[in-house]
Length: 255
Image (cartoon, one colour):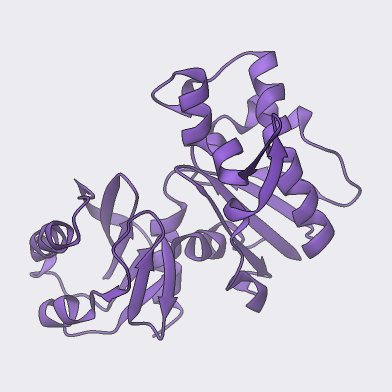
């Protein structure tokens, strides 16, 4: 079996996959704000899976991974640290660390021909670039959420304009998936457009896949997205679970 760990800004999800990709068990807990508490919670949660025969563990990191060991979370001010000692003490199998958006891109681009850009609009905006199901080198430093644009007279990062969290705050809703109405959808696209235009000009993709909470309401705004020849927009297959399924594919392909 394969173990997937998705460290998110608000929650951490652990999923146990069968060899054929079926989720056998899930465990979710709140991602603590203090590093020591988070590591303690993670170790405690992982102990629930010790009696399974684990082939490998893949950990999705919302930030930078160096040498499959050192990590830096983009949603926590914890500096550079490692989880490898804690995990190797628990599991006698290969352990992988990879950027969460890159893992989601692996899963979402699987089976889609040509170059694909995957974007997740969630707490921030992340993404990955793949071609024929494999990550491209350009995906390593692909951080579109931090690109800056002028919006309402001020320079802001794209994720502060168009992320699901930014929209939820602006429209005073707990979940961006609850947003409705033509004017709201047009506004969502207006916020997405600068980054999408730059992605198309810089990477020339065949397909753009939109995930995260905004991926769940894709059908409500897709007709307002900017039109370009030979570019297809797609809703993500699993808007809120692309990462853990990407963990599974990553583990399976690294035997």
